[in-house]
Image 1 (cartoon, one colour):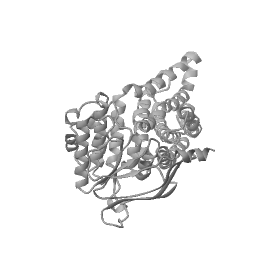
Image 2 (tube, chains in turn yellow, green; image 1 turned 90 degrees about the vertical axis):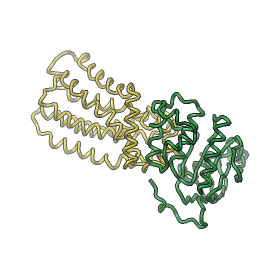
Image 3 (cartoon, helix red, strand yellow; image 1 turned 45 degrees about the vertical axis):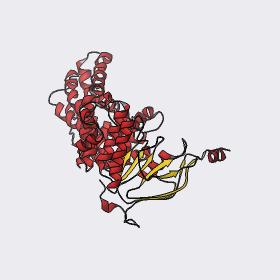
Image 4 (cartoon, chains in turn green, blue; image 1 turned 135 degrees about the vertical axis):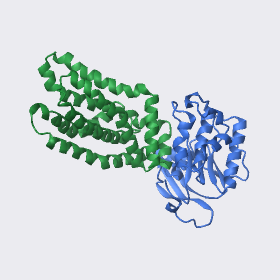
Length: 221
Length: 211
C-alpha cells in the first residue's frame, strides 16, 4: 500500500514539475469546446442544447492526449523494469498510474468544465448533474485509457493505435454519460443512465488494472 | 513486496540462485542455449562474452522480467536490479528519484549516498548530473533494496577510476554480508575471487536459422 501511494505521489510530483504536459490536455479541452460556438454560430438555444454533448466529446478526446506518455516514458528510461521487479504487483502499478492520470487530467477537466458549461449556456441547476456524470465518466476513461496504453506499449505506431482501441471501448461511457447530463434539459430522470454509467465504472475498476498489469509484464519481457 | 517465505527453501544452505538449462529465443533467433549456473552467498559472477552473446538477456531472464523458453530459473531470495538505463526522472531531485526505492527497501538513503559519494548532490535535479553521477545514483538504488542477490548490467559505464574503486568496495561489503551478484562488464572490476561464466556467441546458429 505504501508503495502504491508512493508511486502516485511520484507521478503527481512529475506532473507538477512538467506542468506544460499537464496543462496541454486542459487547454485542449477548453479550446476544443470554444471552437463549437465559432462553427455553429452564436445561437444561445442551439449551444445550450448541444452544451453537455460538446463537453462530453471534448473531455473524451482530452483524456486521450496524455495516454501515450503514461507508460511510454517509464518504458524508455528503464523505470518500468524496476517497477515490475521490485514495485507492487503489476496490476497495482497500473492502477496507481491510472489514478495519477485521473488526478492530473480528469480532475482538472472536471473543474474546467464548469466555466466551459457556463460559456455554452448550461444552466446552473444542470451543472451538478453534469459534473457527477463527468466525474464517473473521466474515471472510467482513465481506467480504459490506461489499459489501452499498456496494451500498445512497445508496439510500433502505438500512438495511432491507442485512440482506435480506446474510442470504441469508451462509447458506452459517452452514451450513458451524455444521456445523464441531458436529463435536466429534457426533464427526465437521470437515474437509469447514471446507474449504467456507474456500472461501466465498476466493471472497469477491477478489469482494466488487471489487463493493464498483464500488458506491462508483456512489454518488459 | 515479496517476503522471504515466498521463495523455495534452498537445496544447499546459502544457495541464492539455480539456473537450469535455460534457453531463450528472441523471435526466430536463439539467444541463450542451455545456460546453467548456480550462485551461493558471497559469490560474484562476471558474465563475459562478445556483444550480442545474450548477457543482458540472461540477466533479464534471471530477474523474471522475461520467461525462459525452456529450462528453469529458481531464486531463493529477493533481488535488486541495475539495468542498462539509470531510470532517473530528469525533473526530480536525486532524493525524490530514489524515494520509492527507499520506501520499498530496508537500507538507509544517507548511508547509500555516502558510500557512493553522492551526498552533496542529494537535492540536485537529475538532469544536472553527469552520466557517471547518474550511474552511481542508479547503483544507490540497488544498495537501498537490502536484497541479497544483485543483478548488475554494466554497472561501470561512464564511471571514473575512483568511482569504480568505490563501487568495488560496496560490492565487497555486500559479499561479506552474505550477498551475491551477477555482473556483466567490459572493464575489469576491483573484486577478489570472482567466478566467471562465458556466454558463447551464437551468431553461427543465427545464420543456420536464417538459411
